[in-house]
Image 1: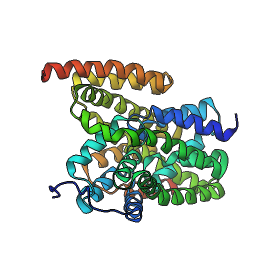
Image 2: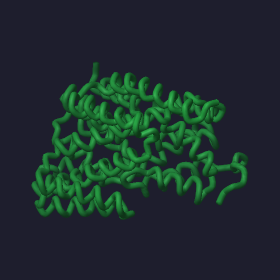
Image 3: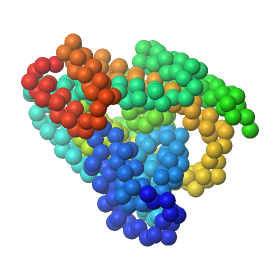
Image 4: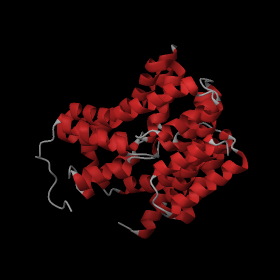
Length: 190
Length: 173
């Protein structure tokens, strides 16, 4: 829809950034990325679809929470450091207040059997959602034959052997990226 | 080292390896917070995960709740800042250069290579939470139904949370 040039010159104030990202944070349950895309690309046109994909690529490439990284980038693009602060504060402010409110309730009523039961139920459902996410992510992996074994290795190292994650990630990423490099060469020689 | 400084340090270290976002970090968070530092017991950790699920916002918010339970409001601030600040500074200085490398082969290789690892991490997180939540056969059935529904339909996530709370509140899991 927004195929025209990036609204680089378009002036977006700190308040607009804060409110826009509040909107994203508060409407997202179980992951806010789809909401971020809808607001930034389709509703406000702050980013073109292509810019969104490129920036998301960066945010997923780097460690850290993807949506927070994305807020930093969008805020910085329009308003520098203050823009980043406004965007992240907007994204996290409302949800933090709600989550801490729930935590306060938990501190007072967490020992009640009915609350324990509800939390157990939510945890069970939450696990199901995590498994579904993992399955979906797994289906999107490229070069499955060569790379899905790494999923198994990570699972064994992290879930069964309980090895520390930094060492596991650095070691396996070197190998899997190496294989990806080799496969890319095979498929699309440059 | 003071508790707050240690919280900040541990979560900063955690997020420097958080490929795949906060969800993929759950197993490592549990290892550090429950098994290594004994800041929380296993049940509280699972409860905080459930509370974060029930609130809107990014998945990383469970980090704020962990800080809150360990050291109150200052703790919540310490862990939240540790989650946001270090990577934000890195990305702030990096993003303008990113476009230049777009499509570079090393970039593609890392992007393709990191994906299966992130999948393994999310599987690990789900497995560990399932194991610690200790929900029995009924819970396993709820989990399986959630997976099937989520893969086949576009039901809003809030429905799952509400259903889970109801089933649990009635003492069925």
